[in-house]
Length: 389
Image 1 (cartoon, rainbow, N blue to C red):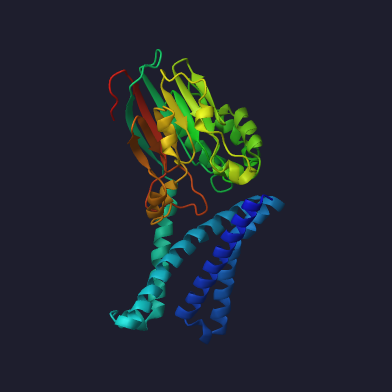
Image 2: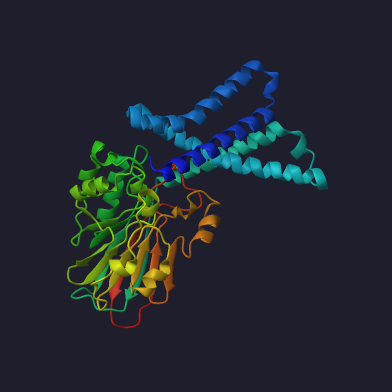
């Protein structure tokens, strides 16, 4: 196993174990279970099953994949969402209690009734996770109308549908993919673009669930194109992922470009995480775009919206990215806004227009709070006049 991947898994498991212990311990205290042996044992059993479900399911995917393992993974991933908000709310309350010891500003009811407070925390968490689960399954169509101030051969307009971060696996399965494909086809795009993280982890899911045939149902006149995301490297089989997607008529651009209909260029970058998982960095954008005629419109696909200045310097007209999920769970969006110049939506950076999608799928918890999964529908007008949005 790649040392970076090993360290990442170790750190994440350590955090996961610590979070489960913290919530288990605080729940035990708040519910005063020390006084009841039977209730205490039942509580420990429930917490243990919830905590073990997700890691055991991930292990089971490798050793003996089955429908039971899929269901276990789904239940365990819901617990991930519960755990996140339980930790967030409980830590906030513990911080208030710590401050209250010095300034004594909380009412007695907030101090003397821990069981009631624990009940409120649990019900609030359950409500957030229930809403987030529903929200994650109801994508919206996000429309953009932009202008690129270049002529594009015989094309006056181009209808682009972009779908990022599908995260196909045992949670977002082939049935969900069918609904996504149907929604895309209803928009009747000229071209479909998939900027990374088509799969969540195991590459073989594309074959095992017949997802290749589903992708083949996409028949835009100008084709379906994709780039790799960081998740295509998780299974250490990016070349196999590319081969499978090719069988579904999805053309993966990996540090290369394609001239589409003699009208515009589509430039696809390998993912920034390539070096972390393989030891080999992706090519510089200048090298990737060697031979591109800048008189024609240039659309750049890059999974992660890092190094936006690269696109500006190399004369790209439009960059399409995903990856951020807009934090997926509020308030994580406060973090993504600090990490990226643009974590969702539209931005003009000098001559480069950038659109970042929050994606349509989920990673980890199958829930979204504070954002909506989306299919991005972009109408591009080509003209020699100054561009606008």
